[in-house]
Length: 533
Image 1: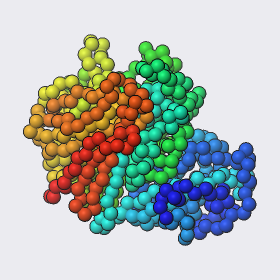
Image 2: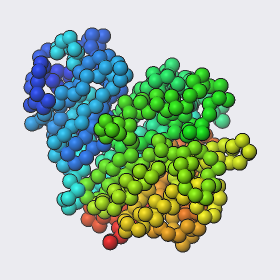
Image 3: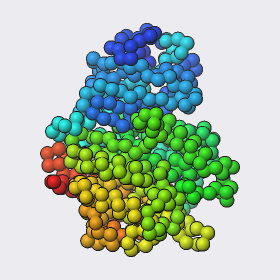
Image 4: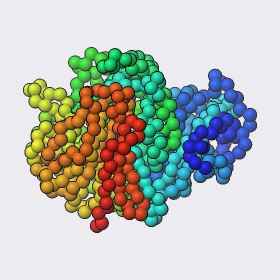
């Protein structure tokens, strides 16, 4: 049965789980007794369900309860739920804003997995939520020959610059455009929320018409409390397009700055920002990261690194996805002109750089996809310092010469990839709120000790559109294609919203990237043939 036919089914709350007690973790599905169905008497699942960090034999399934309840899940390889298994999930409590996740294990590789979630009241097994249903695909095992292709979509920057859920225009429609491509996996390249951008009820557009936002108290101001950070995620999940997409497509999340506040680093100061009563950036970071870890369908890496975001997610024999974190380990945003590496020039940091080089070297996948939250070679400014000299947010430093500042770390990384003999590396990113195809080559570069590679940029997802940014020449960046709005902060209704689609053919193993717009129309296509070692 096709996935979309399954997703259109209406299931009653009694279709999922039977009476419980002290049950084993995994049981065969049973017929449920009559259940209480009054919404006022039971917990609900207002944010839908999501899957993430899906591997060949495991997957995260996420849910949020409207009040204290226990999560249960049933899964099957068929939409009819024949031969299904059910799993007792975590207790979803108000202390985590009702959020929780199950790490499903023992899944079959290379399969469509259908699942449905319900909540059970702690006082009575007969008080259950309506069922929420979902779907994802497990990738093939990495050691097997590829039997089918891989389709990945990516983008970033959701609900920024005051552009929220406009129900008159169909909400965040770009999520529906991505869903229609029927992808195997989605990479959210950061700025999953805009904690620093108030969303007002109305915004007057240049043509005199009004953009009308759905508004909640938590998004009407900058986020400072833990509840306000959580409220940003709750808000995005109020959009029907976002919920439908999350319930059908496995996701890979990373974060950037707006999960906390704009362009934050250890040099960030909010003392002059009247919008904030809480001026402690480190405290805001802790609250923002806790909310992210609660709401992202991400697999925690254990007690020692429970907040680590960088990780690798194999997608079968065709591709490994290396997820980077350019936010947690960076030094201060400065003029970025240092001539030697130090703590002030860190962006990824030495442990993450070493992890990435070793992981790329060990990968046996045809393509190594690096999901990066910021572009390598674009100027991304961050105001000026006390002397009036420009500060920089990303890698580039406003000069076109030899590597300085954070470019030193990037030069070391690119050289390390070359020295390790790693081929077929492609970078995917967002952040700058337009779409582009970039080619980097030592023949055009000031620093030349690296192999040529491609970087593809996309976004935003229902946020203001900007760009294009100036291209830095240190690593020989050539802008092969770009599309941006004709004016800064263009509303999503103007159509300048973008995502990227990446397809790998299982026979030729060629990789094709297609940059697409709000309506899913193709703007630019680039096909890359794999290099053989």
